[in-house]
Image 1 (cartoon, rainbow, N blue to C red):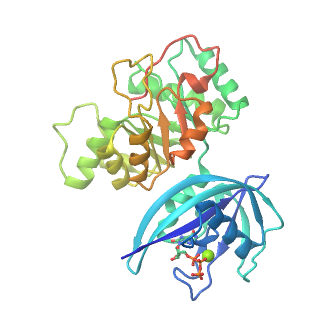
Image 2 (spheres, helix red, strand yellow; image 1 turned 60 degrees about the vertical axis):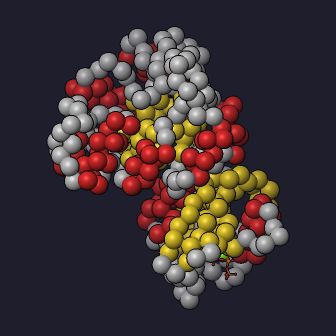
Image 3 (cartoon, rainbow, N blue to C red; image 1 turned 45 degrees about the horizontal axis):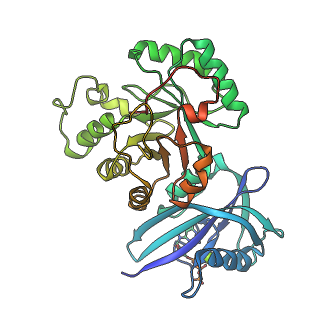
Length: 340
Ligand SMILES: Nc1nc2c([nH]c(=O)n2[C@@H]2O[C@H](COP(=O)(O)OP(=O)(O)OP(=O)(O)O)[C@@H](O)[C@H]2O)c(=O)[nH]1
Ligand SMILES: [Mg+2]
């Protein structure tokens, strides 16, 4: 089946609301909500297609846009490439120029609307920030707390609590203290052997956990040979749904495993060589582009990148950048590793 190239727009206004429209009942995937857009014409660039579709459907002229997510989906009757752009600037008042209902909704409310099956990763991409901070190892809790305050003030909105060398009990106790103080400031991603118990917190799997969980879920094996640390192998109920499921990936195989498990997003590393891992071969941008292209999930690039590299990351199709020291700010004195 020929794959149809469709441009779709996540349009965000100054209040961080997102515009959705309702598809006509008689259309493909009719009656469901959608991100405005449509088929790219033969002689048209992606950006021109975006501009034309939003003018036709909403009566707005796009002034600021960048690629957000590129996905491929096969419906029983149709194969589509959904080339999704984030639109943050436009002239005119958006309205249903073709008579379709349109609505501005808060990003978190998108989950309450019925979209076509292909749209699940678009909804995640619309909700997730551009930067994903992974906490560095710190000397003490005061340093952790002041760093988190600094990150919050710098506009960081999602944080993975990582602290090497803690056993699970010590980590859980730390997580409790951190979330009591900063619970509402960030989307939290926690590590550990089981799905986090804190409401709203997500679970970030190491690549080792990802492999173990994938093996258990897809092969129905007990996974006894994979290692004793993976508590998730022993407890079926540990896969109670966290708010978000993420995983650390380094290659095509791990990306596919994460996709199979329905991960909401992944990190991909290492992009560049880092001082902490001078001997690890970096992926390089060309390979990164290919890897991102092979999956339908938001991908954060990790390893020697800061917010300065966001344009390159977007251009490669990534959701944004993840970082430890690069996103933590200047006053952190303790060196840390690239996340597992
Ligand atoms: N615009 C849009 N299309 C989507 C989304 N999700 C999704 O699966 N699609 C599919 O992508 C295809 C694009 O369709 P469209 O109907 O908007 O195309 P169009 O504006 O050029 O419409 P037309 O064919 O009536 O001229 C449809 O098969 C639709 O089901 C989405 O969020 N937005
Ligand atoms: Mg359309």
